[in-house]
Image 1 (spheres, helix red, strand yellow):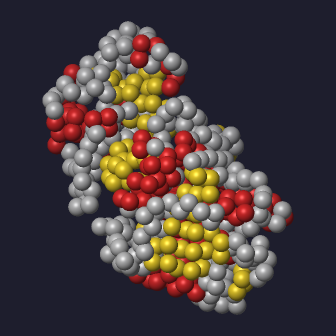
Image 2: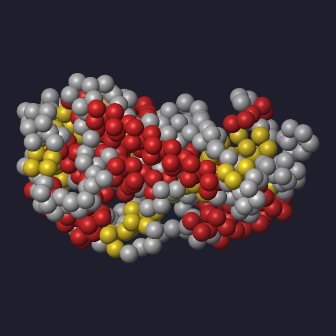
Length: 494
C-alpha cells in the first residue's frame, strides 16, 4: 500500500495505540491524537500513551481460559501491545502482568519512533467532517464535548454515559428442577408469552427470600471513584438500591412471581429470579434486573443463597461504573463504521468491549478491517470459533439470544464462541467418555487456534495485511514500500 493514504486515530489508549501501529505497519500514515498532556481524565495520573489506569494485569495467559486464548490469538495476529507487554512483564503466576511505567514507555517510544506515525497532543472536541478516514478509540471516559457530538450524530439514546450491568452465569452451573424438584430452576416465560425456553426461573420460598434479602442488604459494595457520580436511572437501578426501598420492592419488581407458576406443579413461588438466555448457544444466562455494585465475593455469596444458584459459576460479574459506549449493533455497520458518517470507525471500549485485552483486540481487528477497506477488499474477520471472531460478533450484536435484547459491554467469554462438538476422551479405565467442562474448553481452544491459523494463512496468501509475530521489540522498524515491516533488532517469532 502506498503511503499516499493517511488515517486519523483519536485516542492514545490501548485500542488507539494498537490500531495506529497496525495501520502504520501496513504502510498507512497515521496521525494519532491524544489529549494528554494538555488534558487528563480524572482516572489518569501519567502523560504517557497506553496508560494502565486500574490493574497492571492483562489476566490469565492460559489458553484454556477465554482471555488467555484471546491473547494467544492476538500474538499470532501480530499484536503490537502484546509484544510490548512481554518486554514489561513481571512475575504473576499464569497471568500476564506488567510494570506500568515500563509498558507505557515501551509503547510510546516505539510509536514516536515509527516513521509513519505523527503524534498530535490536544483534545478533539467533535468528530471531523472531512474526507480523512478517522478511527475513534477514546475509551470509557470519552471527553464530554466529544461524547456530546457523538450523541448528536447517533442519537442521545444510543450513547450510554453510565453503565449498569447484571451478572452472567454459566448455564451448566444452574441447578434445574430435574435435579432439585423443590428449588431448582424451571423454564417458563411470564404468562407463557414468547418462547418459554428463553427464561429459567429460580423460585424462592418466604424463608429463602428473607435470607437472600438480609444478605443483600448487608453485602459489601464496591467504592465508586470520585469521578463516578452515582446518578442512577430508574430503568437500571442497582438491586441493592431497590432493596433499600423496602423488603417487598424486589418482589414487586424484577423478582415478581406473577405469571410464573411452575409448569408441572402449578406452584406459585414467593419470589422468582428470572435468568434470560444471554447467547444464541444457550451456554450462559443473564440475571435479569440484578445490576449491582456488590463486590465480586459478595455477589457469589449472596446469589448462591438462591437454591437454583447454589453451585453458580459467574462468567461476568455485575458492575456499575462510568462507561461511555455506543449501541454498537444499531449505530455501527458491519465494518465498525458510524452509519451516520461512514468515514468514521470506532474501536475499543466505546464499542462495547470490557478490559485491557479486549480493548486492544478491538483496536487490532478494526485496524485490519480498515486496511482491507482502504485496499478495496471485502470484509474479512476471524472465524466465529475464535475468541477474536466472537468478540467482533459481540459488538455487531449477532450473538444475542434475541435481536431486541439490550446491548451491554462484556469481557471475552466462552459463550461468544459456539460450543465444541466434544470428542470423547479415554478415561483411566480405558473407556471412552464425554470430556468434562475443562476438557471441552481445551478442545474449544485447540479448535480456535487451528481456525485462526488457517484464517491468517489465507489472508497472507491473498495479499491482505497481517502483522508479524514478534517477542521482543527494541529498535524502530523499517517499513518497505509494500507495507512489510522489518527490523534487525526485532528478535523472536514463530
